Amino acid sequence: MEADMEAMKEQMATMMEAMMSMKKIMEANAVAVAATSTIAKVNPMPPSGLNQMNHPTSDMVGKD
Image 1 (spheres, rainbow, N blue to C red):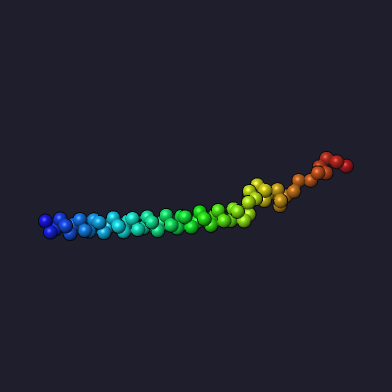
Image 2 (cartoon, one colour; image 1 turned 45 degrees about the vertical axis):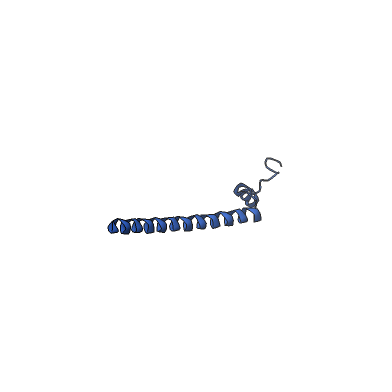
């Protein structure tokens, strides 16, 4: 009976470690999502808009 209790304690400790690791990963992901959202709010221009800004099309194409 004592050995069973020790084995259960070991399993519980292992499960708690795994859960804490998952919590840390989820927290890190939440920070990354928050940072990405903040950047998107600061610079809402989509990447395609950046391409147009760097390479504007000319209105004079084909006109002489």
